[in-house]
Image (tube, rainbow over all chains, first blue to last red; front, side, top):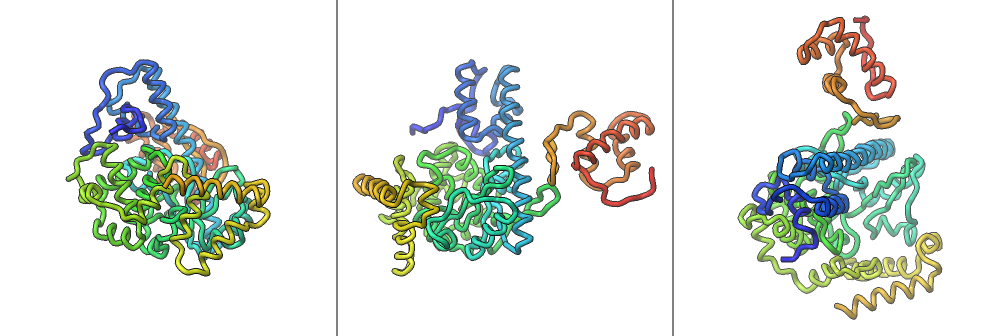
Length: 371
Length: 74
């Protein structure tokens, strides 16, 4: 299969994965090869795995290249600890306002699913808050000096339909508040109450921090890997493989949650991609074998295309999400917010209502004509 | 690298500073910290205590560590 990443990059991403058959690089890297690898490592956030591959003698770099790799990793870790400080401050603000939370994605995965958090670089902070408390969480953070990055289409839209809201801290760092785990149609079928049942915990600077439980965290990793980008990224795929192969997962519970959330097609896509990218044997985990035989239905194929189409647009995802909203009144409220958003939303993103409608209609029409 | 949780800038700990940081992962009196460092490194008690003092002062100044309980000077 033709993968979108160079073989060396895939080898770095696979480093340390038990059972991976991705061939290890042979010999020293010339400058052209190192330059390409360095760019991809930065792009795919693989600095920790790169350094580990060097330290374990799998990747042969000359002293100057090793120094360069160390600098790349250091920069990633400076970013990570700075984000962790922002996270602790944000959690503190939410705690003072009695708002529950779960840490999502990079920070949680690094501390809970990797043998050493420095193996997993990340570039922002993601927090899940209860949908009913999203507006209160935003208000509490605004009072503490944070600001919204984007206004919502209409008051109450994010709390009711949206994935969440991006907040900017006083130190200009981004904290993404999530109500659900995905935008678009698959985000609206997740049973949000399931996300609050069984937290996992880890310690950051002496503070116990809450995250999703292992099965929920695995499912979120599959959502991120399968839907996060039209071209899959290696870091989220590595998360999926890491959790499959190195921590005990209750497979029955994974299947039960996935079915209830109506994301079987997403999980199958992510696991299949991870299995292929890292050349994992099908018998390494029951979910790998299952992903090979799973066939998505028509609805799921249509929904997946919204996320995986290289020309995916926000308008197309939003339009597709209508089908996932139960109840006529809710659908009408959703459409009204998107078609007739409030002025602050338009001012932040578009130049006038008519231009926004024309642009969105054009995006949707192009998507429909291709499907 | 160390980034104080409440305020301050990131800084690096190297060499014996790392050992001090490791010891201070749990609360210690100065005497306990000196004793633990002596187990790890060769040295004379007075010398280790003298080397430890400026490191502790710097960590306190940067708010990377805090005093959790006052005790008799040791």
